[in-house]
Image 1 (tube, chains in turn purple, green):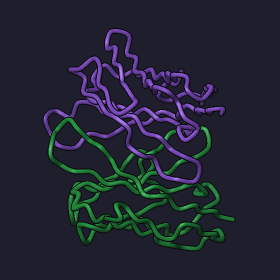
Image 2 (tube, chains in turn yellow, red):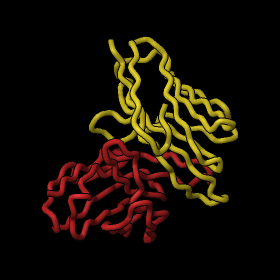
Image 3 (cartoon, chains in turn blue, green):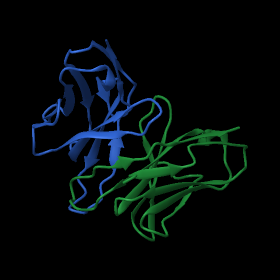
Length: 116
Length: 115
């Protein structure tokens, strides 16, 4: 799986399968996490986010799980479709002491390929 | 709404030339950012702005300058382009409504080659 700051892994799945993309983070002070999807030649697109006081959050066909004990984040995509093929990035935000701005640190991403 | 718009989409420069990348957002966002994306690396923050008239350095600011004269625009300047600045540049913006949440919305990118 992906780790914020390391190499780019790949995941190949068949259409209709469920996909799980992993992300490890190292900063225990991070209080917010976010997943982006980036299709070839396009900018990153927001998928789903989660605060550190939550373990799970669901969206449309996507679920994000957060395990703070082992500093691990995952993105689950249900019934993966060819249109889901893209690079998926996780990002973490360090607690900013109550101020409004907190820098996002992005991982390199995971390449998801969905075969028809 | 167009969201975040970047111009130009592509540009080729010679070493030593200067140029300005323009970012415009129509979402009334307070925060704006400039990132660069290189193969095999995550997005790296160049400069950011927390409001009109304010800018700050990010992770890789050397060789770049920025200005935010209007809330909706954030300009990235390269005064003397170098081959190491060949990259894809992304602009992003976000709301200032919650100290925790920071959903950044990205433009389509500018592909810059410096020869």
